[in-house]
Length: 284
Image (cartoon, rainbow, N blue to C red; front, side, top):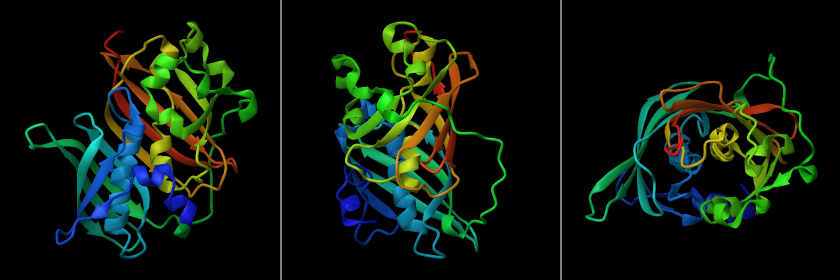
């Protein structure tokens, strides 16, 4: 990690500090600049917990890279202090397993659990080079021909502070919802990178899987879409440059929907995947 990376807004947003004299506990400050609506972005919270687990598990066997994280969102994260309690469940030769819990204090000072994570960590550089896949990257215009999030209505931007920290260019074929003409296909895709130039890495991928507008927008359903559970898989270390991100859904039923994400790096490799279960907006 370069000095420029250390100074980036994303690295400050996921920064954790080991609590002196208290093993496996880390302190953090949840920056309001990563809000979406009234709460913190779920991908940012996942990356925050992922950073604490990287420090907890990375000191032994070089297991500092996230491979798989399953997170349950118990209550909405808020700007302000937080603590992450981690646990090493198992250390193995190729993978280590850890758990993390993010807590914040309520107005009375009582701890409130926000997020609980179970994760597998290892060394991405130790993976075999063989790739067999039928997956193909999304076809869309280059970033300069896509729709910048800066063009979103001011009232929407005021509720999505994190967009100021991103360069997000949405595929014009997937923005009909912004013009009152959602396609109904349940698919949103676009180009993504951090506005301050920080290059992607495995922790940034944990954020990227939840960075685009929710696919409910493309179904004509607007409002907060809270995540119940999100599982992310990091498949490779990304190369520098733009990421291509696709969010899609195939099934909305009983007031819940799944949202699948794929993240492709500038080399055209699939570097992260995720699936989350979310609640359909109340306005639906």
